[in-house]
Image (cartoon, chains in turn green, purple):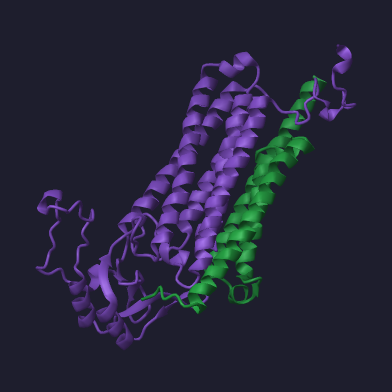
Length: 122
Length: 328
């Protein structure tokens, strides 16, 4: 009897976690959509490392959403450290590398098109 | 001979092998995680390639709000992002029902697992249907545009800066072009699949006859806005550079901007949609396994957990696609 009570208590806790994560995800998505529709001027005009603040906000919220999905829905929070790091660090490192190298290259090609001698807009 | 066996000094410890598994996960679950890691890298490759092209053509890249602003049933109403936001909610909610199914599986509640699986499948199917609508809308196009010799896309706006459809001001004349077939000429292989409704000359005539029309250029005037030419400059530009009429989008032309934009749209959302589709299929298989009691007999619903991982991953990818395609 006492054991089944403990089990149901644990089950309730898991359910609560699931629904609260769902609510967080929904609120973040709503915030993103609202910001995307009204586009506050000061967030668009001010930039940090070539990107407007607004885009940084979107990116940070997205990463937070990804964290919530992976940790709560995919149960990463209950996995041992080894598994967590094998999956998350690998992906994180390679993605950061890709982003770094390709976006810088893209910006460079943009400069060549703009200031170089190539006429592509004939 | 026993003396030659290698002793590492780690026997009995975490990395010594043997009984204890450092990841504390079954083979199947571990492999699902590693598959998802590699799949995440594939998607990152696509999205970063999109970022590369966007940085490269930063000045002429279309603004998402001008492209994805339609909602089923609201014809001609500017509704940026409402539709994708809805799709996002559908997918998040199907993720919730999936995790509830996994949770019920831990407690071996067969009925609940089946119900939640069914809801998840339903959510996935609705998402796929929404995506099909969005694709067909994108392919059919809304307003139509003109492409220049250099491949620039120019769109038509009225004095208030609202986008005008070709059908609003072009009169279809007698100069209808016929679709050529393979056997019409010796070296001819195929014509474009769909000949635009109007010829470029008819568009030019219609533009001349409506003095309040102006051109919206592909390049940015300010952050989040495209340049609109004056009436005189518009006339000059269209008459001298207008080369062909573009209606809708395909892999080589699209009325929204550079062909690359449509290519990435089809490829990335298509690849994601393919994942959703396979996810639904796998969920259906697991759903029937639940119904016939396969996991009940095993006393373990770990299969549900494994497909759950895949399903959440599909949701995870959509979160990124949503941000990089529709928001930033």
